[in-house]
Length: 308
Image (cartoon, rainbow, N blue to C red; front, side, top):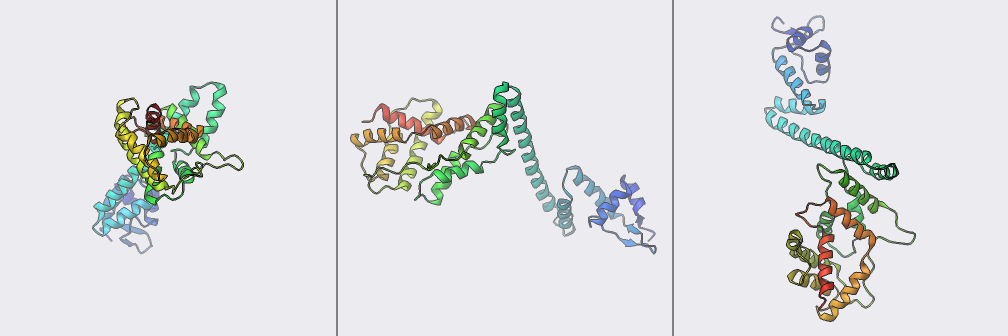
């Protein structure tokens, strides 16, 4: 017992209070070496290193349960891995907190720099969005509007491409764009209405949406370089692939007559809500990655300009 320290001696050597030592002891983070005949706690010299490690981890804001996991792994000679995992988790959590703060800052700037008439509407829009923002409602919207008959793989790539990720350091205008997009995706449908696109014409033969969306994905990729460089819509491989996707989906062939019909068909399918969605998505997207809506509009413009 002569080589052991009382709780007060350990606290003094570590530069902490007795209450702190007792707190960590009671939670099993700081094991006792023995008890005195009077039942008082006694600690060995190793407890000082353990206590210093605990304080260092707490200085990094690791929660007590996380520290417990690190110490348990250290006791089994895998402490380095345990600490590495804990640091990684803490960095991830801190990143989420910083993203929330940046989003909140941009939202406050948005409310500060608007008129009194705009403020109530913007506050309503922003208040409906989590901080940091969550894209679950947008993904749910796309799964609702996509036609049946698509594979899980197709649904996944469409949703991933159509749902913009909130910027890590948003501008106030991007906060407003995301909030408006969220409002579009969550607004109720009119009575008896539906978000889903209208069905194909009654005379459509063997309509296969899976063929259409695979072809559209390829056409959008082919059109992307022209979109990034600001090229004007024009005929070419991307447009041919675009038309072939619709023709193949409807069991038809790419002919001048089909192209003229497709122009009318796409005009009929245009929807102001979807147009607004893609406009807002463009405000959030990376300029180097055109949105699906921008690619679709470019190809539709190319077809309209030269349907033959």
